[in-house]
Structure formats: structure tokens, C-alpha cells
Image (tube, rainbow, N blue to C red):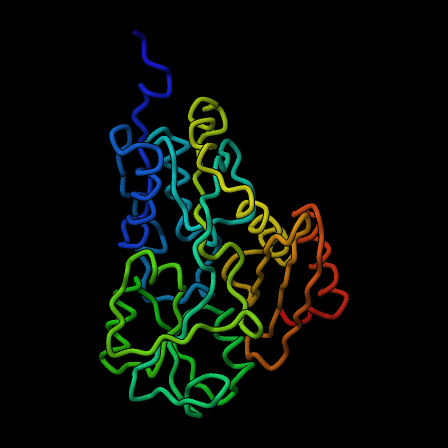
Length: 308
């Protein structure tokens, strides 16, 4: 009996080599079938350059370009990306075949137990040292508690937590999704989930994108079976909002969308780098792209462009 075409395919999945990226790629491999998939590790610019903060690096796609190049050249058949790292500009010749069901998109303030202080909006003393290299996180932290000292922190999740334990920082900010996926042991540290009511995640945070060559219709159809429509719509609205402000890590911008019945509820913010000014608004809409565009227009009318 002849096998179906999709059963004969060996899918080479391109990914970064970090512990979290490998977890994500292996998760997709499990979904498509471990017996017909193979992980290919590709080093990106963001992996090679660890001593420069993202806002000082030129261009976009620090964690994706080399993987996309490998996909275009035929070195790999599919690519798995943290969707928040993927530039909003479409790469000719490639297509996002699936957006995997989203993990919790919230941010977590991870605090050394002896520095944890109950009662404040953030559980930290004035002047506490917080590690993050994200302009978005830094701006929101400064907006909430202007006295915080924000210091740059690069590296994978394990490296960041090690530096926190060593005393380089009183607290650090991490994505909840990474902690959950890697089942990180935070013994001796206090996890404080930053509420959406005053701290928005990056657009598409917690979501995974699986990319294929646009011409590969057979593989596209296979991967498309992994798609989660609700996640796809939510991150499409968030990324459209981001696109209207130039996109990338150079913008202190947050966004979060979720579906409520037939409508999308989208909240977005733009802040000045020092956190002194922050504009945040919410709207409801049907079409994801139009909803993101409308929210961007609303914030621009209120002066958001002047903050960037």
C-alpha cells in the first residue's frame, strides 16, 4: 500500500540553539511527528553578540535572519521562532504556516527573597536594581517606580537567573512562557506576575510561529494543522499595532489582544524610554489587522510618535 505523501516527508526544523529555543523546536517536532522530523541548530546574530543591548544593535531579525536564510536556501524545511522575535515585515519567499497555541504571555518579576518587599505596587524597595535589556520592560518599570535602577541583562533564561542568584541584581524580568516551558526551579526566589492592568507584554509574547517556504504547499498544509486560530488572530492584531510604529526591539511598546465572543479586545501602549510618559489605550474590533491599525492611529493622535 502506497504511503500518503505527508508520511514520506522528513522535516528538517531550523532553530536557535538556546535551551528555550530547542524546547520550542522539539515541541513542534512532537506535534508533527518525532519520527519524521529532525532538529537543525542555527546560530544567529543575537546569539553571537551578547555584550550589546538590543536597542544598540542595527537592523532587525537578530534571532531570525540566519534561520530564514537557511530556510530560503533549502538547508532546512521549516523554522520555529519565538513570534515576538520575528520582524513584522514579510520575508519574500516565506510563509507562516502555523501559530502554535499561546503560552501565558505575561511577564514575571523574579526577586531575590531577601529583597522582596510586600505592600508596594512592585514588591521592591526604592532604588532596587532590576535587570532587563528590554526597552519595553525598562520603560514600564520606570513609569511605575521611577527610583528603580535598571541595568542591562542579556543571556538565556538560565544565565539570567544565575546572575540574579549571584547578587548582580535585586530582581529581573522574564517571560512567564519561558519559565513554564523549561520548568525552571526558582527555589529561594519570589515570582511576582506583573498584572496586565499596568504591565503589557511584547506583541506576540508566548506564541510560536512555524515558517516554511511559500512554494512548499505540501509542507504548508501539514504544518497548518498545528495552527491555533485564536492565537493567530490575537498576535496578528498585536503585530499590526507594532508594525505601525516601526516594529522591532528599538521601540518601548507593548500590546495584548484576546478574543471575547466575535470581537478582539486589544490594549496597546507606547512609552518614552525614560518611562516618564506613557500612552495606553484599548479598543475592540473584528478584523485583527484593522484593529491593530485603528489602535495605532488612536495612540498617534494622542502623541505617541513624539515619545519614540
